Image (cartoon, rainbow, N blue to C red; front, side):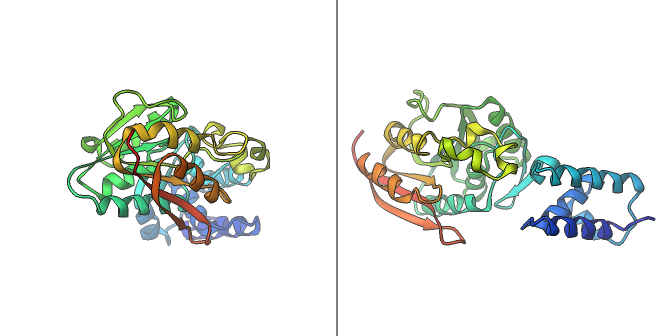
Length: 289
């Protein structure tokens, strides 16, 4: 018996809801769109049309992979962040809604600055934060930096996908090491670094633990290795008065605030996500390097 695209969507949503998937409606739509090779707009346009048996089979195959734990973003190979389409692969973390707080605060901070602005997105992964900044502030020139060759490949794809080549560069850099000589003169550094304590990775949800890249999750024994390295070493890449913004893990705000203060950052501010969790810290570099 043939099913419409909407029937397929409702069936997938029902199964995902039964499995406790919070974003069942979004994931069901993405699975059907991927199986059918349709955009979101085409799905809404064609939702009353009948899907072929081949498409219905592809929907079921994708659904079974999802039920085994594979994240839907990896199934479909794309995701949206801050209104931007992004290519996603297991080489990078899947952009979360929580990370939009980092992009929002960086954009607000940069909007308060005058003239051309240079921004570094360190531990960039897919490039989501830096690309959101570049898309929202035409005066910004953004460098996307990561130590992972696979992440840099995805970031380059996303730069082209969003037509931001003229204002965005993708460079390799290790956030745990001192900045290379060509990394300097930034008004703003943003970073969503690895911040999960090493011993807690085994307790993460299966979809994260088994599918997302551990090098983008593991923040060392206490989860603070990257915060220490970036605050102490990468402040050399900031202009005096420049801003450093971090995404934070749950319960890390006080520790990161203290270490930033010890490294000469003042005017420190914390920002919460929609769940009331301190998710972003922002500080201004006051000391001379």
